[in-house]
Length: 189
Image (cartoon, rainbow, N blue to C red; front, top):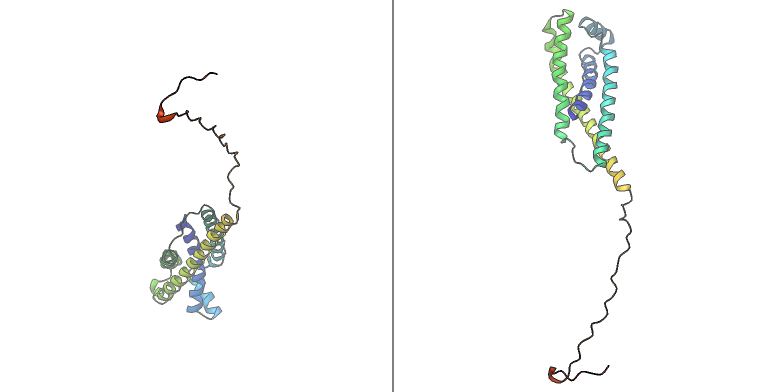
């Protein structure tokens, strides 16, 4: 489940990073529009919106699951390094695959990728790590909020019981001891 949340944020970051790469490669809006249209990127604006929605769902799920973990006092958060690496690597790998697929489907030669891939991979790694950091923070906040709810509850009081105190026993009557433990004659009643 944790990997699915990270990948949902990576999908959003992939499309946002995609837009940023083309802004860096072609800063002029007209050049960028021509480049995007000629390389099969017409899907990009709706994909950014869909990716943002997916990332929002992943963030909400992350918070709620971490909240539940915090309420149950279960430790289960991913290490920070893993939270940064998974979306960053997934995003950079997906960027390469997506760029090659876009060029093949639109009939554009792959030679143009030599300019885009180095910038794109570096940017996707940075955006992916940032998305992972954001998701890690949301997870941490959810767990903390869940723990606050547990600490804020009053402690359960044990049920009241009436203690049964045994009645004191009557002191035992010591046998009458005569001189040197010798018994005397019977007494009259």
